[in-house]
Image (tube, rainbow, N blue to C red):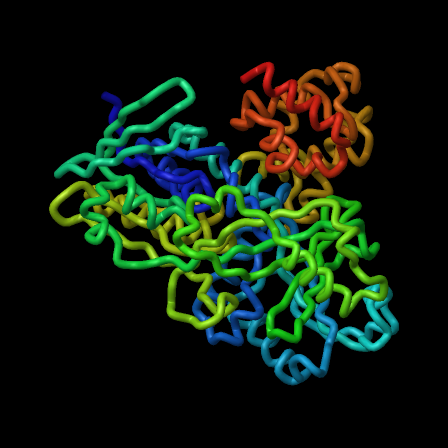
Length: 513
């Protein structure tokens, strides 16, 4: 029977991050994901690397500082799939007074050291292109810095790094049973090739919204009360995508009368993404979380709140795509869903039997630190403490400076130099396609394009700038099996293909399943 040091259950951002960290410390790791990598919560975020400005109102200073400390670390680790982003907050005196916003932004600028992200400032919207899309009543506002990330590809890159460091990654392989022995866990998985039974010295429960149900229904359900003392509150967050509402490269933060906020963010060049909502979900509905969908009421809410700011109202008929995911938030007894902490907790169980670590809560911005803390705990429980290593480490494809033979302190500048090198090496690539491939794959673009000297050599054209060579690469190198994997998680090309073209991609995938 195969034996590993650690079995990680869950292929979202936390599971992939923990598998990567442990593999980098020299442990043998198996990651088992029931469906596709990032198939739920971790591909349904607002896609921000941020401290969480609004959390200051809930006195979450420790969480905000932790996230701010991670912000620039992450932006440097994968400058192809992450980028700095400036946010505009129009001032609405009916919401929060200007002095409160200034105080919050001062804290946001100074809770953690910034090496290169610019600080906050005021802006006169009537004299700036940033004010052109907004209603005339907004005459001033504030600008601050955070970052943007392709969330699904971040998960993928962590899994790729884990694999390169020796971990085994299994997708579409739910763990159907996990039995805890004195020295080992024994787990059964339903893989596409059939049932597989393995042993592991430790088990990490990183099942996200399913973390509690995994313990109660899979990992010795008769003793579930001994395996978990914490609980989750499950909150659905939904987003809509509409045709581009503004031409500049900044994002907006809008304050709503209900005390919440929404973002309007440049998305995939031709679109604007608007979100998110906070709709608490009953625990008994856990079986349906994989089918999370935005409701008509949520669509109407997001359109209504965005229309309070934009000159041109956002209509429900404008929505070209939407997505929703269920966030597993650590239950801290907060009253409203918006007030629930976005911090995380790691719960360990070691005495008397094989070690178990469960992950409760968390957010994308702090995933690396969570993974580092989790890997340190697992290593200590196994009696083999090993040093942390991920701070300052690059993710696969992020070695951009090597291509331009020049590195700056700004990863966004490194990306532009890398893009120039890509265009010089493959001059036949259309500019838009070159930028998309450079963002998605970083230096791994060389593996995708190989010796090709023209678009014709990339094989069948499926529409937009999608060619068969890319589909084959996603299938071969990135665990992509279905059209959804390829068009909505590995890329967002589903936005640019029509129904017939999407069906052609699905048929291509079916022929190889």
